[in-house]
Length: 123
Ligand code: FES
Image (cartoon, rainbow, N blue to C red; front, side, top):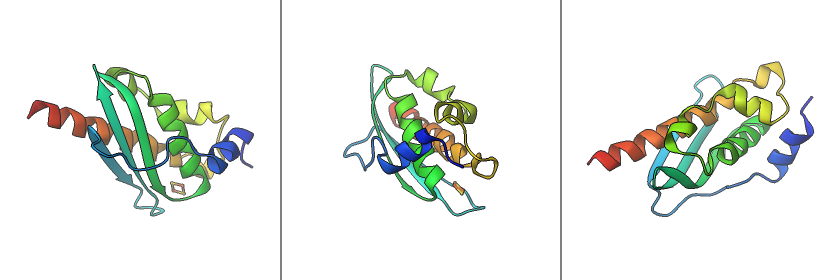
């Protein structure tokens, strides 16, 4: 049912944890299933130089959160904003149909963290 990559990212998720003095923090929860993800980013010269996450959720939400951070790390803010659910699903070699929505947590939490960063920068 799950690809080897999903299982690998679930068993050993990358970039787990909170971040002291994050430049941006974003949380997104799915009201349908109750899963929730928070992403922290550290930005230097408009590049996401560090990223971490905390998730409360299902197997797929752990794997998609982990993959979201892997995809976003090292990208510019502009590039990170272009990450779509399909990119995360593809990078994980697919997800079961009923778990496709889990990839939305990563996309939305990442965008929210970037928005938080941009808001703080303006002040
Ligand atoms: Fe909803 Fe995984 S079941 S995010």
